[in-house]
Image (cartoon, rainbow, N blue to C red):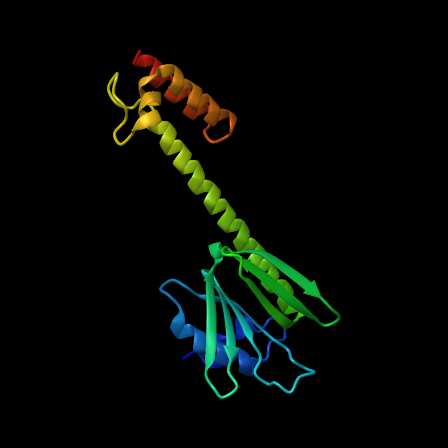
Length: 207
């Protein structure tokens, strides 16, 4: 059977305190969703403080979690899915660093006294997740634009595509308007030349 220390060995890559890491791991593990896994744990280092209850940053493949132990026991967890976090900043001093995140609602999350090596790992991980979220948004927007382009003039001659109303229906009924819209999408890089040629041929075939 895997021992607790072996279970967290992959999380002890930047001199994390094994005892604190094991404790945080055990607390967070039951909170994980199906398919979610802990990727990294960074632990606050309060060398010059009498407070022995360090905060911890937990990174999973889906969320950012901030674990804050309380004075008289217990703890609080703040968690954010990655697409709701952005604009991560890293400020370093001699031995430690401060990480600041801004949420999609404008809230600032600041974690201080993280050892520099751990802070850099957290920062790099957050940057990667930010890029993935941006790419996901771009892909979704592209698919929506392509779906809109695919809805142009798909019905029988003189009829708009199902669900289209107002100006969308007018565009679907007017081949010139449909071609103009397709050209705009092509110039904006939202559809490929192949998509453009295929849809153009389809529209012209209905004239």
